[in-house]
Image 1 (cartoon, rainbow, N blue to C red):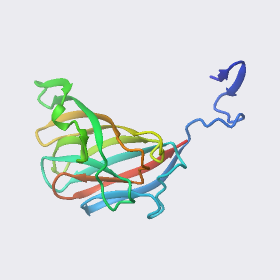
Image 2: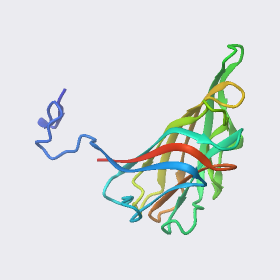
Image 3: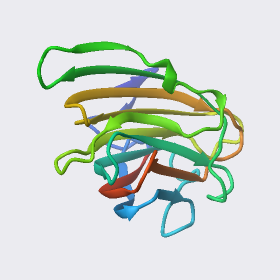
Length: 205
């Protein structure tokens, strides 16, 4: 399918003949946990690019396994190259869930995990188990972090097999209420370390 604007073909079957980007994804960095207290992506450190090179950055969480049972997976952001992670956020959190027994399910807002002009870590998923077969997977997207005009929007969706044998499908969206450039992103569990797991960072044009 082509993309046409005002009678001019911009894209035709994915071609770049007009110079308009089609959303190519580039792997920037892979971090692999090994009893890690945090996994940090800081611009200019260890080949991490987190600036105006890309307008959209995507983080993929692959089988992040906590050392401690019944913990939360969280994120925070930095404007000072990782010296601190405490950016003001306003967010919304909701969840769909279903248990292995098949007798409990639901969908609803979980306001206890919302933030309203707070610098706390944002919870992305709760109740994660540390059984041998338990882990968390998901995605977080951060938009235009280098902008010095607009606040920074982000969205996340995660799933785990939690400690109580539930499958929670958690959604978080919000904005970082700062016009300073975001140049660091940190992931961690609420208690204990990230025993094993991988987080991949991509840039999208």
